[in-house]
Length: 192
Ligand SMILES: *[C@@H]1O[C@H](CO)[C@@H](O)[C@H](O)[C@H]1NC(C)=O
Image: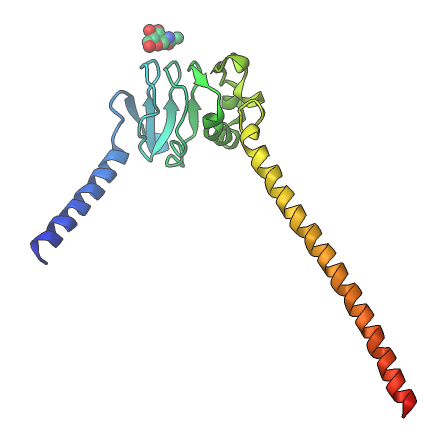
């Protein structure tokens, strides 16, 4: 192994180690408590003016994020905590635009009752509304998808109709020429 290879390998090993430690360690602003009987951690990050969900240890069982300054959850933020059993996210100024969809879908899977506690703070039209009740229209998701979708369908339909007309013409032509052929065969047979 030459020097460059060694440095690369060492760097890789270090980053791997760092990642393992990172995912085992209590996120700095929070208060962590081992739960002996549940073989996991209780992570209390409540009332800490947090603007982002911190990196979470894999063995998080209870996660308290209530009373912070969270406006959204970045996609995938809860994907690593597979053995989570309880979560609290109320009393945050949630911004219910299309970026909140990850939280909404994740909560629908995890716990309907926790989802019911999430109320939007912004934008103005959905202020104080429960996130659970918001439709794709209100989250501004449909507006983005619809024009693209309908245009796609338009072109697809046009191609299909074109193909159908072409097939009909081809069929008509084939029928006509086959009649001619039959006629010719009859004629040639008749003459002999
Ligand atoms: C919410 O958090 C603030 C600090 O950010 C704290 O002063 C306040 O007491 C907390 N409220 C509740 C109900 O825990």
